[in-house]
Image (cartoon, rainbow, N blue to C red; front, side, top):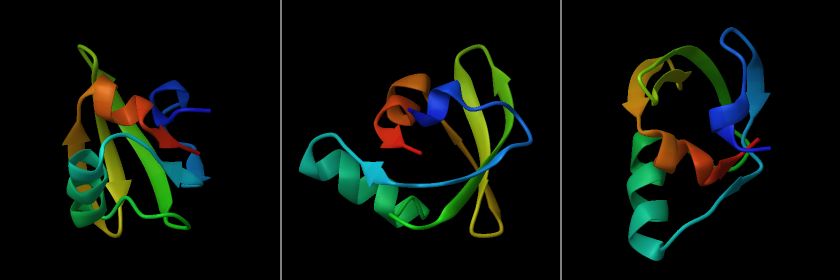
Length: 69
């Protein structure tokens, strides 16, 4: 299921990062790599705030749809 469908407060493991090469590289630089734990903090106006590797990152719904948990 895509990260955009996760409920706030749930801890999930990243199984796949999709999209074009440049999108995958951008997400990997933010810490979205296969096997990492990610937790949705909140969803605001389509944007999603997540905790990943002890950091909070805001990504768009389109980016979150490319991350499979």
